[in-house]
Length: 308
Image (tube, rainbow, N blue to C red; front, side, top):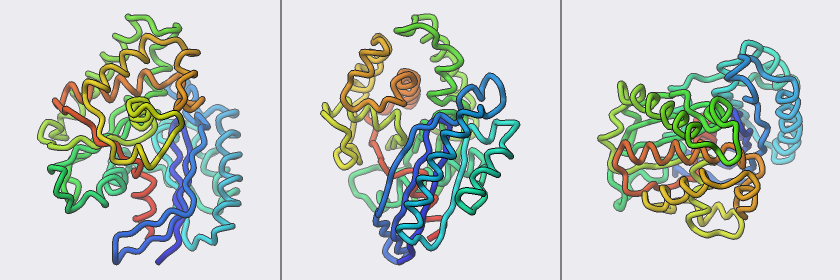
């Protein structure tokens, strides 16, 4: 066993996993897994820069995570940063801050690397499953981008496109509830991005759709009728196309306060869940998937395996 710590810093959230990994058995035992909404990507799509207040929220979470990593005695740490920090002109400020706090330099990875980590994390425990058909299409709907990966026991093709729930919301949604024209603009961006993804990833060839990240798990939690977020219940749940369509429609018509009142809705996701749900629904429309298999294991687990 190797005790590892993995940090995934995205556009909307920063997450930590401390785990014992056994490469010989393929077992990853969680010791601590947590998520903090920091909205690092606040305004990046418009300004091209990380906002000072967004950096401070992120550094505050890093200081908390540093204590947890130290308490568990992790032997190795890897910090991966994704869409927002890729896009920002002042990402050196972010790199220096993380290095000062955690002692490691964040790796600002490419979209293709992000896709590979996501695929590994989501499918490692599915390999050899006799109830899920291959190839898999893994979709990781983030705050700034969405990754598409097709593969079976390994990645065949991957593509990252700039349709994340934060990016789409900041671009197009101004009213509460969102106006029909705003929703149409979100869908148009998603359609264009799906066209781009299909240039390199044969998403229509997949037999099983696996969905990752907060937008997908929140839709799943609503579909399951949970009174509180339950990771064990959500992990590997199967949500039908009809339920996703119904929930995306309901969220699109709801006001901010109505969405906030949903028991499983994280406060940091209330304003962006509409865009996230529409991305998921559009992917199911494009691929003809009748259900999505929801995974709580994702890029964070892939990062952990990469250092184990």
